[in-house]
Amino acid sequence: MISNTYAILAAGVCLILPALADDAMPDNEGGRYTFNKIADGLLRLDAQTGEVSVCSQRAVGWACQAAPEDRTVLEGEIARLRGENAALKKDILAHGLPLPSGATPEPPATPNDDVIVRLPDNADVDRAVAYVSRIWHRFVEAIARAQKQMLNKS
Image (cartoon, rainbow, N blue to C red; front, top):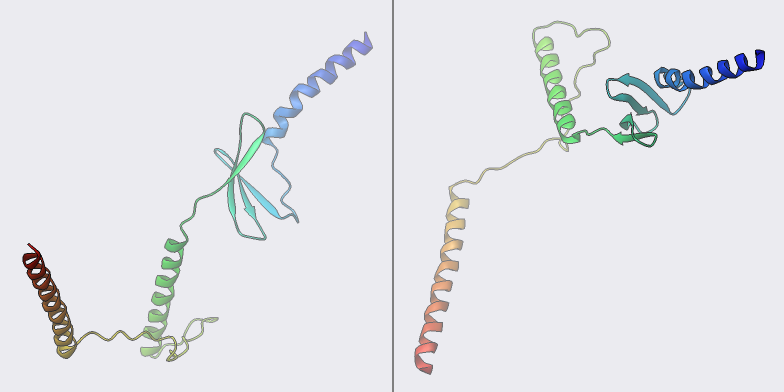
């Protein structure tokens, strides 16, 4: 009778352990990956590469898929915030106020960082129009020569 009790207890533990394991969070301490529980499963952060994956239980075990990210949107937002930060620092300094502790003034722009865009002036536009005109006249002359050759062969 005691052996039957142990068998039933062992069977009960075997049935309960998988359910408890589903709710347990993986060990995040000192490993390459850190996990956070989300509605669909787990969010995995790779501490070495910074890649984020969504891990969820599938029909056969667990599977992790890389979380989508739009790097260009992030880089654009970073550039926008840097510009805004520089403008705010400049405005604070222009009013004779000190910058907050830990903030450093923006370094002066170096010639290599400046992008200079030169817009065309009237002379540039005139040269472009003259160039297109020469090409057009040569094209019309080539068609006229081709028509003349065709008429002479007939």
